[in-house]
Length: 337
Image 1 (cartoon, rainbow, N blue to C red):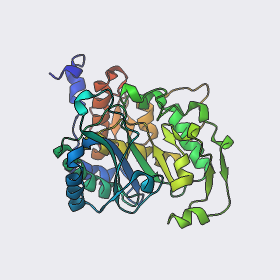
Image 2: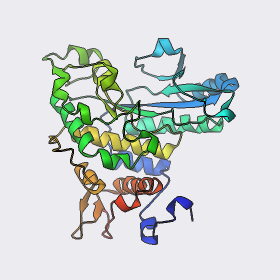
Image 3: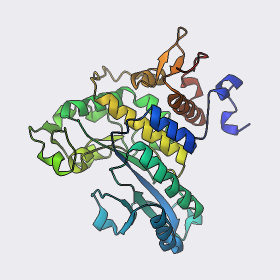
């Protein structure tokens, strides 16, 4: 038995999966995600310094890639994958990592979930092939293009993020919960009306090729940027950024987080009430609000499709691995519709 599951009974183990393969990802794309919306991913990692050129060349054979210096690429979105050094990553506590350099690879923001995951699978295979690594200073950030978003809908997203913060914390490593410097709680910036203004013009978003979206100006101070949900990216790139996930080069974790964060974006298009006294939803309610599952007559969850079942079983496995098996939702014995 895997040590992290030592306290979990047999029935709970049957409700878990620890791997999302390419076939599952395609099912998720067909049954769960909205493939009319586009997204991007940023991966921070360390690579052997002497192999950097070789890694870039190998990546260039797999995806449309451009190599840039940090200052050239900083704060800009490009219509292709970008590979760049990242001096913000810290290897000082990892003596065995001498000879490794911090890098970041960023996907273009014009890819749908199915397109991005197909390319990401190739990218991650190469990075793992060259023994790239992550540590606590690394993150995996996801950007969702903000089509149809207004100030009110950004407020909906903030409301959802705060109301479900404790549940979402159960899906990430301990170093990314609470008030991690680069990914703080959104609780004290919940009232987005104080720092977002709505302009009645679409010129800004149209200049970025995004239709049906009004221009929303957001305070660019780092006080607002370094949050689990970073809305300052909306004013800068026209995207909604989720910063909370720890660094990873694992395909399954990336696929899950892409789908999970897009579900939150879609939920933000609908009304979400502000929490009172920061009331926290259990994960069971989070998944129902995201329309991933419904209750059976005993209060257990019935996933809405096979793709939703894969994601929820992976979610249960992630909660168990972080010691939150007791907070994980229970699945119904009824068949998935």
